[in-house]
Amino acid sequence: MREKEIEQQLIRAVRCLGGWCLKWTSPSLTGIPDRIVLLPGGKLAFVEVKAPGHKPRKLQQKRINQLQSLDFKCFVLDSREDISRILEEVIRDGV
Image 1: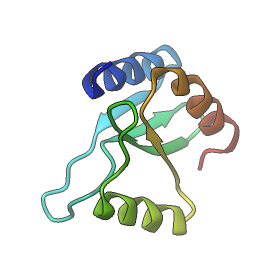
Image 2 (image 1 turned 45 degrees about the vertical axis):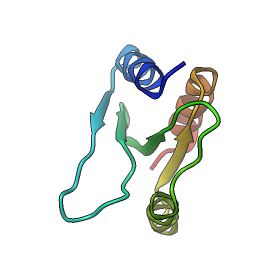
Image 3 (image 1 turned 60 degrees about the horizontal axis):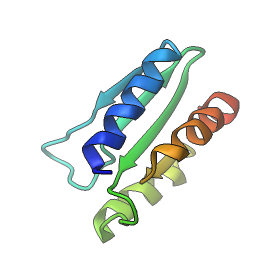
């Protein structure tokens, strides 16, 4: 499975929950996660999507750590099987 396929499944799963899964790009800040997940009830998380078995680059991991230090939920997603677990955690504990 390719990264793009995992990302598309994440988008569909978020939509099914009534939320948005926005592509996040920032010309002035590199290494930020690929997606912002916004769910009903003010739940928010950041998701870096990777191909199966791939890990974030050093700068991407630094940005994830920075967001987590601000108490934001951040996830690395490299498997469609993890989508439900991630969304359940966002619903349960999301900002």
